[in-house]
Length: 231
Image (cartoon, rainbow, N blue to C red):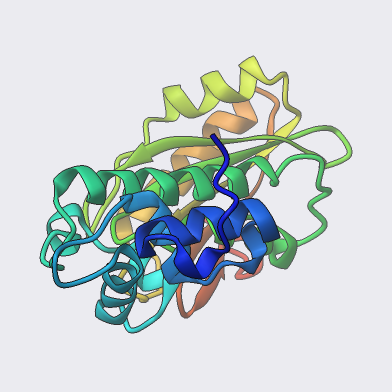
């Protein structure tokens, strides 16, 4: 049954839910949104207080919060594994929503590709490898995660990459992976993989437009640096 009482007389843990229903989700603070995810607080702290404490541990930075592990979140009083998993799941949904927005965009240069891919990578503390499959007019058909690794490396299987390209009936693709360290210099492994992908693409009559390395410091484009066609 709907509660007709004003928000200020509701239990603290119920207020963010009522506020969302009455005013919409944009009216809630970050801590209030987290409070809804975790459900209830502790004897010492309301759910909103727990949300504030969690945010404070991340320097009140949502990007840093997105990089926190389950074990790191569990260090906050009032957050156990189940609540930490709920928060991590919500963050992942947000990332996937961003990835879904990558389609129907025309890639005209490396900057455009970087802007479209940055939301995928900005919260990651480990490496992932993605591709954007492209139409003849360089519109994005789909974004695919095709490999992931640890803090210092990722594994990308060319067979998996080209299967996605063929499944999407793409005319071309852009490869991208991140360097969580912030170092944009391509490694020897990055250079070797780029060469393999370029050579395989040529055999299959598919265009490899670029390979981007993305970090919080910016990006590196093999095409812009004249390295995409280099041996």
